[in-house]
Amino acid sequence: MPLQSLPVEIRSMIWRHSLPEDVPEVCIGWPTCLHGDQQLQEPYLVDTAFPVLMHICRETRQFVLSPHTQYSHLVPRFRFSKEARCKVPYRHFRPELDVFYISNWQYNEVLRMYGFNHEIMRQSAHLAVEMGIWSASSYWFNDLVFRHMQNIKTVSIVFPSSDSERYNFDSSVFQPPTRRCRLVEMRRPREVMGTALMPSSTRGRLSPGNPSVQDWIDFRWQGAAERADITWSNVDGEDIYHGSAWDRESQSFVGVTRAAFMFGQFKRSDKGEETWEEVCRDRLHPQGYEPERVEMTRNPTEWRVNDDESWPPES
Image (cartoon, rainbow, N blue to C red):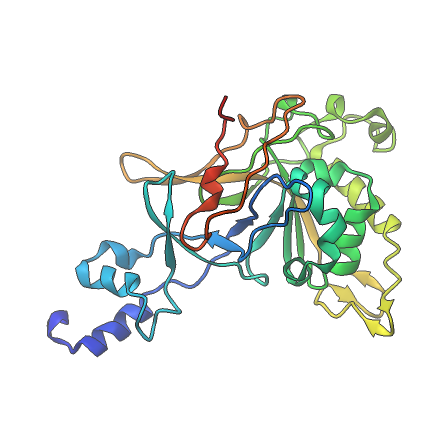
């Protein structure tokens, strides 16, 4: 029986079962540089891939794009992108699935002061931070991860590129991607050396020889755990550690992984080949550069606001 001869209700059920499951995406909060009393714009959204149904026929496209069907809550929504020059798909951030990324400018200006009361962060299972935050000795970040992120499972330290000779571990800042991206694990992190780029105080406390990126990450993790005083687990008589990562018996976090990553950005070649390419190696902020304040005047569900932060900076 030809598909088109089936009742429209049956065809809609077929299209519904053709929709892909959600996959982990990266949520890059906006603005990426916060000034003064600015907060990250809500709701938190992530870019997604175009559903295959968009490319089959007019009826399947209409099924995806129609906002008033019984399946509308299962399909991606669309907003206009200045960079793509068309509407692109998105969905709401899922704290149990997606990765919440914090840039250096976001952390320094606001999150270290208000992050403890940031409900989405408290719920998130997967956190990614710019490498400059990981290198900071401030106890604010230690407390944020070890005390207040109740469900934390993974911490990703994001570097601008796999070429460690291009940046300084403790002071370099880079601009995150604009388009849909994902985290790509750094290849051979125990072979990527950063001796010359680490402060002498850090190098002297690591293992002899040339410390690697992974040595540096593990060193910072151990120091953070010790300084966070994580045995404290009670506020006003209420146990705040009820997430999957907190082990009540040992009074410690278990199963939390940390590793070095880079941003990969989706790219389709002229031949239709799909790849994820390292994207931030040329997005290092110049010495002394400070992004301008961006005013939040657009609705992020209608306009992809991340496109409003151009790179390189407009002169």
